Length: 413
Ligand SMILES: *Cc1c(COP(=O)(O)O)cnc(C)c1O
Image (cartoon, rainbow, N blue to C red; front, top):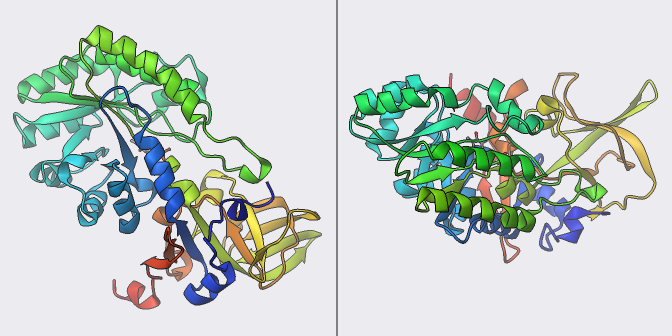
């Protein structure tokens, strides 16, 4: 593909150079149509049985984006009191919020209890704490699916070694604690990992969780977790997540369970990345191009404080080059390393990447930044965090978060 932003008309007729001049760079730019399209797609993963897609808001907590999820019929998962508060502010009713924290204090748990928000306990210790705070209450437990689904791929066996969830061997203790505090175990949940393009490990984990679910009586819900991937190598024509094929293969697994369990509980999934990643790009200005030891560096204002994924996870983000408001065609590629403006040698967006020639003053447009982009921004090097704008369905541009200022940072002293 020569250009993603052209192929989907990402800016809906707005000139990206104008956007950069008007709102400054670095700038997160969102596309409402794409966001809504993906949120709608996850809401329809299961249609035969009661189902909700719980958008996992840690991927992106901008209140205006949460409002889109609300309108598209997604429920939401929150990982912290802060995320719950963002959801309440966006207008989510408490019954559409699921609190899936780990290692929280009594005060944080109390907050969810007081607001009547369903909470999942990630360890026996947290279940014990929940019981002591809310005797006779309804609660969920997070299962670590490591054992049993471990025969398939790293993504699934990874569960065993992670800090999350309660291992299957401790299920008897779950029932003991529930009995001690008269708790109802209303649901079980899991999350096997992030960013898979092949549905098979997830389907295996679903089967495994449903096998475990048979040990729990009268579950109101079973939550399979998130992790649906998106094609980060889209300029190299990477295929999208095969959603239709996935749905087709999921249904008989659910049929089989419902027949055994005697009823269909509410099924849930928890997609984060899939909902928001492709609905955003970052526009950054190229301020300097230089040659060190035969290597070409294009220096932008998109530092690791603006997008941490490449330096934190070695993640790949496609980059398009914009010159005079137009995408530069991907012929005549040359090897360049695209960096940010932070004083760290690891502040690299794209290493030894084949790209059209980048010149000073051009815009670098980084794709697929809607998930774990702004939500992981920092103020490292005392750089205020960027603004976010939304390109609405009608092509109008709305500032959905103003740029942070030095004064904002100074306020904390
Ligand atoms: C992060 C997270 C998700 C979402 O993962 P994605 O890969 O963004 O879909 C879902 N559930 C839990 C518990 C998580 O921590």
